[in-house]
Image 1 (cartoon, one colour):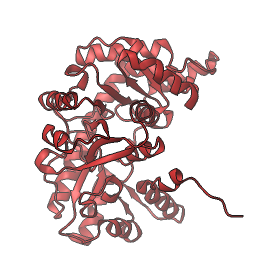
Image 2 (cartoon, one colour):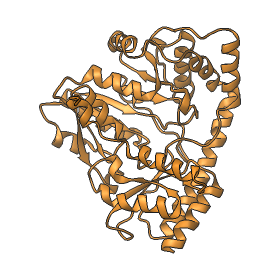
Image 3 (tube, helix red, strand yellow):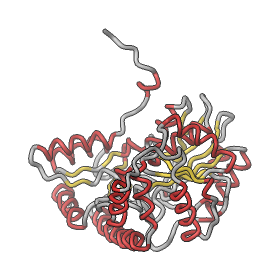
Length: 386
């Protein structure tokens, strides 16, 4: 019997990196040694202080529902982190702990975008953002960016591309897939441009802490009314714990709480108590050591790719990705990625995952694996292109 699926569901695009990962796992199950440079998941284990805090929470029986916005202790701890890292006073009441940054983005878009409206964002950018918008009957308004603007939107572009149906702008700093960073003057200028248009500003700060040679500024330093999305997955290395947060204007908090209550009741209780330990001196020391390790990995991969003819016009300043131009190596980056996986057992992500602008000219390499595995991946590339 035929089923009429919703148009909404049919229009949600696949997350192509997950298709590649699925095939990579099949090859591994068949005995092949696949070098994983496709998924944005740090290879480090959960930091010991976090794991111990989780064990203690279980032993204490802390496994029931929490308030939808998160346990007060964690909201205060996140506020303390903003004080320590950025010198900012953020009221804990403005912080909503979420079931991962994905839930945070879905909730913020549900709050700010009505059906038929659009949110402006850079192309290339994180692919799920436009899918979240489609789910709430809104749309991603993709604006092409390139190396000339460090793969970020500019105030001029915001003004030129603003439409009556544009509800706001989504920025990402550091950005996925390019690793580009917006510095404080750029954030201030973009925030002012969005204010002039009367829209909302949302900034994805998921990769804060993973910048190399400097600390990225938060948009809250120039626009306290912006919505900030962050996560325990990247810098804190808690991917599978599914925990993130929103910093929202005070008047938005009750609406976000209602959304949280209905969408997922509350964030994972054990994950929240575990995350309290993420701000301990012992854990932060671990994360800073890992940041240095990511910097070493970036340098090895960046130099190796450039030597092989991959175009990287702007070195990534943050996150753990290199967005590489493969025009001199292929005329089809999507097939290129699948061929690398099937023939060379090297998994990387096609640019088609991240938007439409020159998407078939680029691939994304993730340096979330060890120096030894990166060198093995480069050696496999040298056999093909060296």
